[in-house]
Amino acid sequence: MSYKYVKYSILAGLITFALCLIIFFAIDSPSPYIAGLIVGFMIFEISFHHLFGKERKKRELM
Image (cartoon, rainbow, N blue to C red; front, side, top):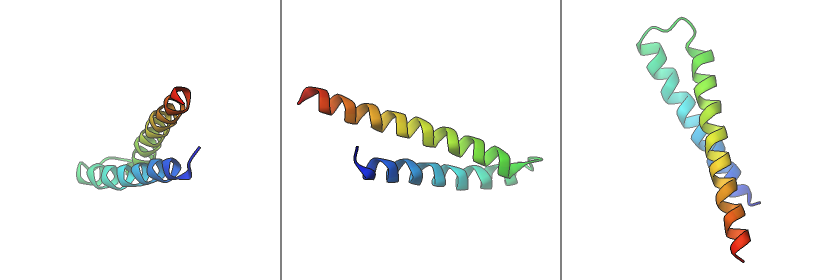
């Protein structure tokens, strides 16, 4: 598997964490860091799963 997919997944997770952190601070959430981490991790996992499946389909076609 290519490491660029891992980089894209990590980048998506970090950007989501930062945006969610800003949003949760704006709505005055009691624990914005934990909420941002949970949402960021979920987006990281979803993007990693999506890109991994895409790579697997590409290999099956070869």
